Length: 427
Image 1 (tube, one colour):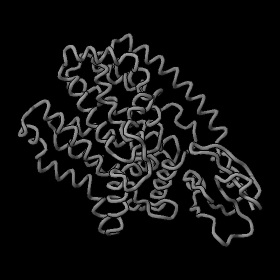
Image 2 (cartoon, rainbow, N blue to C red; image 1 turned 30 degrees about the vertical axis):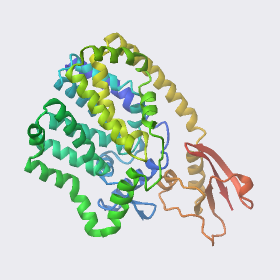
Image 3 (cartoon, one colour; image 1 turned 90 degrees about the vertical axis):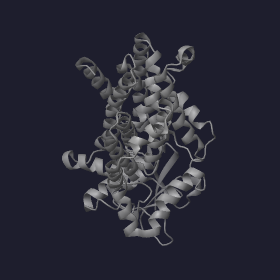
Image 4 (tube, helix red, strand yellow; image 1 turned 60 degrees about the horizontal axis):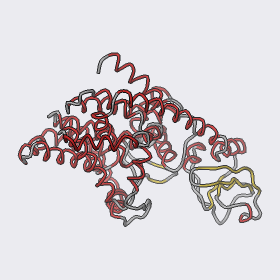
């Protein structure tokens, strides 16, 4: 990337991936749980066993916590800094997108990086304190190093991906590498050769599995059940029903994420069908592998597939003109500014900032009743139980129940959150 291109890319990245990441206070459930776990590690100096609300947090591995804790040690604990982990990941992801596009002889690889800025989904993920953006960075880095015949680094980053979200980090990388290998090389020996690197495999085990081995050693089958069986196998197969959506769910997600490119896709596909260049086909195969893998999962969440935007951006860059890219960057800038305004107005009506001010001032016990908000656990820096049978004389209750269902309680404040309206009662 030329100096001028790098400067333009960096300025745009500041706007599309970082600016306004603290407009919203911490959200529930994922951000609150992740931030509490990271700060708990920092305060207790126990960086091996994640905790949340006085319980083990076995649902997620610790890489996100470790990365943010390194920043916290230098700059202090801040919400904007925690979310910046995702922003930094998105920034580096764009640079890797450029390098992969160049590797595939795309005429203008810089365009591929610019196209990432126009994908609405990445605006959200780059401002969220969740592991998916960091996971995507490690997955794409691993794929890039395998493609450039650097299997040791490929395996190391695949290990980092595994330590960020679990076995899915390994699965995505291997599926993409094998699929591209069989299409581009058409020889099983050439496909498997870079994967049979003994030092690389050792690096993968050290970076990706040492922590898991420790956890199994310390907590035994309980950890195996909670993380590998319940939170991975059962989630994928649907035995654990948490995010059940129809098979076309990710088509809808992609439509919204690529809304600025939808009017042009027909012409892009028409141009592709005409000559079917090898690099464009590779990107379509890469995209299809990710889409199919996560579509087959019974439980679906929108951010599971964000790694798909790298091959899609490269594919678009092969056919999109400079004029169209500029137009969509302008439209994307306008749309993002509108979203900033909406987020600012929404924050003024949210429950979390209102309730935090009251609870910190009153300093009374607080309980959950038919509700749970991880953001409140983080901001109050305490463990919050469900409403017990025997209560102190004066206390607060956080609930989704409306006032007519809470007789004997006084309503202090209410507000909206992404999953509905919440109420703060006192007694």
